[in-house]
Length: 124
Length: 111
Image 1 (cartoon, chains in turn cyan, orange):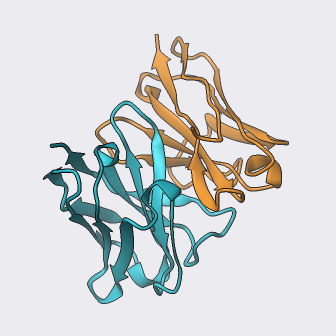
Image 2: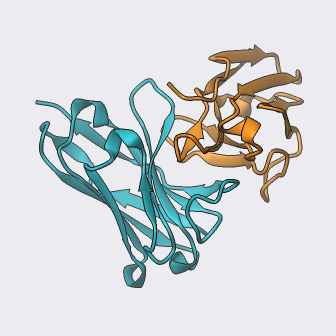
């Protein structure tokens, strides 16, 4: 059974940093690209960042470019999201998501497994 | 500000058919990129419902069906059931934004 378990969420002040982790089981982690998707309170889903199977390519949405860094450790089957210079508008549930492909930015790609999410609250 | 627009809500009685539209632009669906659909019950993990416009992942009942035409797509639920109450999102890739994009989301209510 595929499982993605996020951790590291919590309450943090604006301007501070937080690192999210996602540990996966049930599939060969190093064979797939991975992503973070978030959902702010009362809003819809928003793609945040993605990383290819071997970390050779990463990409991020404009609202987080230069502040968030996605990375992975294939030996530990773990995905990370380093979030710096946090803003109140970053408050959201953050989901760890598995791509159906090993590669990033494949135009037709989709997300075939999701975690339950971890809540990040940015507040003074 | 999603470039994919969905109706905020649709509703239907058990057994009825409902349709959720997803309107895109020439930068995403209209560029020929595939559309995928997800079901999300708040508090749980979102679930892939339809991939590549009209295909079912294993375990998804065939009363969910998808289609794409031009710069838009649709999800149809036939034989609506109580457990179908959830939020539904379309997703594609936007070549102008160089980003994966989701629709604005549609809440399905079973009356």
